[in-house]
Every structure is written in C-alpha cells, then in structure tokens.
Amino acid sequence: MSDGEDQPSALTEFMAEIGSSLANEAVKTAAQLQGLDPMTAAVVGGAAGGTVKGVSSAALAMFRRRRDRGLEALAAAQAEAGLAPEALLERALEDDRKLDLLGRALEAATREADERRVRFYGRIAASGVLAEDDAKVDKAARAFSALATLDAADLKVLLRMAEKVERPWTVVDLEEREGSDEFFELESELPELMEVVDSVLSRLTGLGLVSYVRRERGGAEMYYVNPIGELCVRQLTEGHG
Image (tube, rainbow, N blue to C red; front, side, top):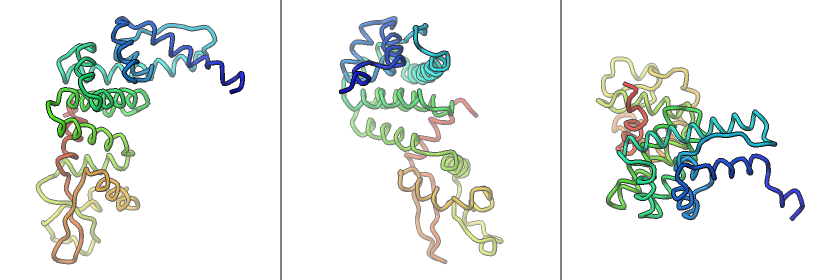
C-alpha cells in the first residue's frame, strides 16, 4: 500500500470527527460495532456539526447537507415508530435484517436529493424495524430497495398510476382508445414520457411494484399498481396530500 493510501483523506478524518461528537457515545459505538458506516452511525446518534482544519468549505457544506438529509430520514423514522434514536437502534439490533435495512435506508437518504424519498427511507425503515415477523421485514426491505432504484420518469409513472386505480392501465394507439372505458391510457395521461414508457413499465414490473395481465381482446397488457407498489406510494406521499 502506498503512503497516500496509508493516510486517510481530510474528508474521512472529518467524518470520523463528526462521528466522535455524538450526543450518545454508546449509541454510536453500538451502531459501528454492528456494521453501520460512520455517516449512518453519526445520524443514528444525532451527530452535531463542526469545523475541521484541512477540509474545504465545499466539502464541509456537502457533508452537512448529507448529514441533514440523514437526520431528516431519522426524524421520519422516529415519527413513524414513536421511538427515540437509541430505542429505534435497540429494536434494529434484534435482527440483522432490521439493522441492515435501517443502515441502508439512512445511508441512502444522505445521498438523496428528493425530499419525499428522504422521508420515505426513514418511514419504510421504521416499519421494518417495528415488524414482528420476517415477512413484514422482508416486505419493507423490498419496498425500500425498489423505490431507491427508480429514476424520475419511473416515479412519475408510478405515482400517476396510483392516482387512478379504478381500472387498469395500458399503452395503446390513438385509434384503439377512442370510446374505450375499459382502462386508463398512459399515452394520453403522460404523453411526454411515451418514448420511454415501455422501459419504465418493464422496470416497474421487474422491481415488483407493478403487475400486469393480458387482455383477451387484442392481446395488450393491462398494468396495475400491486400491494408493494401501493405501500411505496403510501409511504412516499404521506403528508403531501
């Protein structure tokens, strides 16, 4: 290993400094011993910001933004669970999968620009941590992983489909849809996404958020948001009307 590799970067040292400034050292230590990364451990423990020599103002601002997103996700998790950070971590420590979900969700939140998803990560993690059976933990983990994978177009389609659940959705030609009340058409609802809608639907179905059945007449697929997708949308839009 080179001398450069032996020396931690200024940002790494800064993260360690923040991690050591936790209000509750016991929480931080337990979190790190259980495998959470320093950023997530700092979030769980309620880290406070500071200044460190050798760290640029841009790097400091970036770290603070990421820390604040993690803290926002943690606040959402606390609100969902009705527990303090220490108690939430204690529940997560009961099961490696719960701890992994909490850690991944908070870590993802620090890198997420979409505020809705930041809070979603916290809420879905809390639902998994509080779950009493393995199936519910797995369901929460699956919902987190799926939504974290979506890009803006995927999310737009999922949310629009979830707004109208009375009938299934399909992608049809203009000539086919005239006078039809059997389904909603993505072509008319989201015309700006028609060039990518096939790949979007493929991704949504592949991630298990949307399911489909084939129409007897014409053989076209009819899509609908399934229970995992509904869980994601419900957690994502909570508090947004």
